[in-house]
Length: 195
Image (cartoon, rainbow, N blue to C red; front, top):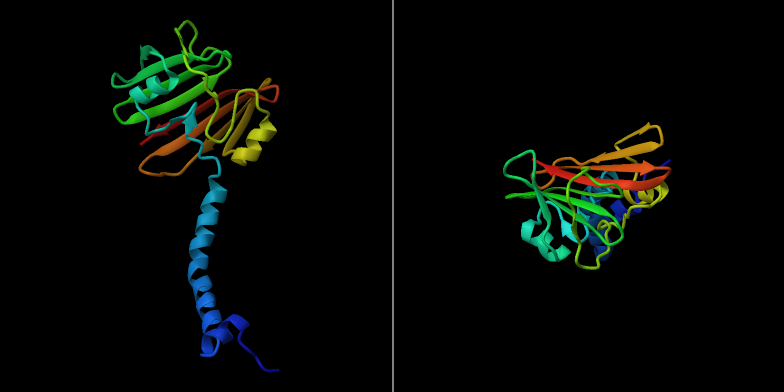
């Protein structure tokens, strides 16, 4: 029995198969890189850092005001350098953006008031109040799992189910997403960015 090299390696050894040799070499060199990229996409398919066209962490106070076309109801946050901006859309969706000099730290959309008794400015522009990946309040858990993949953590308390997703450090920041479902429907979506 004679051992022969695989066709790809045979073409590398043969001068007459120049095109095949180049294609084979390129495949061998690029395979580890494409495999790594596919692995990263498979691990973190969600990466949903946009709410109502506002991107986290790159957005700032003026972006939020400009895109929602109204002055917010501003409330001081836990950190004196951070301000919480509260809005309510025409369809009744409550929004909160926490912003500091480094950009947007968190974004929340909810069917219920985010903090009871806190004012909410109306959203003056007709917008799609959803995420960059197309997640909206009222979506089923099945749809969200299809878009985001398996959650890092999942737990239930009575009729509420919470899914949590975490990312590894990316662009100098960590990200966390928290989604709450009531009777299989999304009732709260939150994204957090921190160093």
